[in-house]
Amino acid sequence: MNEKLLAGKHLWYFEYYTGGDVGLFMKIARMVHSEQTPIQRIDIFDNPTLGRVFALDGITMTTDKDEFMYHEMLAHVPMFTHPNPKNVLIIGGGDGGTLREVLRHPEVESVVLCEIDRRVVEVSKQYLKTGEAFNSDKVELVFENGAEYVKKIKNQFDVIIIDSTDPTAGEGGHLFTQDFYRACFDALKDGGVMCAEAENALYDFNWTKIAYRRIKSIFPVVKAYVGFMTTYPSGFWLYILASKGLDPIKDYRFEAARAMSQQLKYYNEELHKACFVLPNFVKRTLEES
Ligand code: AAT
Image 1 (spheres, rainbow, N blue to C red):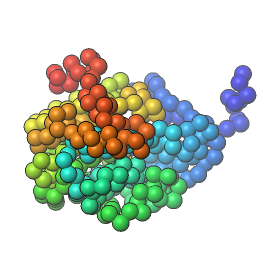
Image 2 (spheres, rainbow, N blue to C red):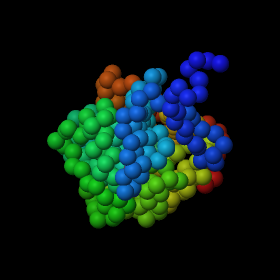
Image 3 (cartoon, protein in one colour):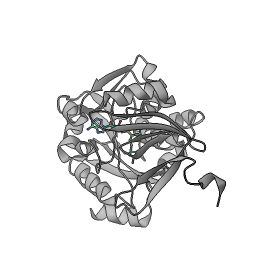
């Protein structure tokens, strides 16, 4: 047997995907932080291959190695679809990764980040590289359930990004309801763009369909797109972009996207178009939903 796998020598982390038959495991080379907050369990540990890993309730949120894939795709597709994204709202995203990507855009004047669990932001600032984004003075933090916060806001944001936990666990479910999407529509200015993480087509496709159908009943333009995300279930992640009129393929800022892609590891101006081309089984199912 491989020496590395000898029982008793190391701690191991197991993530069970929805259904419980398939999952992901990682060696815990060093435990960095564990706590139970009033909302959820936070664990941060180091893995020799993936670097620092951040998990909530036993579900992987970020690893140093691949968090850029998810955060770049979640942030830049809506940010380059909008012609001038000055005021941005991020719901969830307490690790700071989406915030870091949003702050790369020079047009941004202010970002409100509404996170349900204050401790996620505090431990991210202390232990994660993504937490460095909170040092920006453009950021206003709100610690509240995003579904409650957004109901109180009208006509204020150019872009809203929903960086939530899965609807199947914890508090993420609040961010997949029809009322929540309607409140996001109302919180956007005319010409506004919303983008939501939308799960995967293998283990949680039902949730992608539900989110797509609900968003479609509210926004005139709705398009799903896809990206690799190697440590999320299936490695193949879906996102939903919705707008009050802008088309993410016809209207995006090609030149600005090209200029920024020099400093990015995943997103580029060509990928922006390509990510909307969906595999048949995803395309058909979403069209029917
Ligand atoms: N940035 C990649 C990591 C995440 S974290 C999602 C964040 O959403 C968590 O910090 C969680 O505390 C916060 N959150 C959950 N529900 C709410 C809510 N109702 N209001 C505000 N914040 C909330 C995303 C992981 C993607 C899924 C991986 N499978």
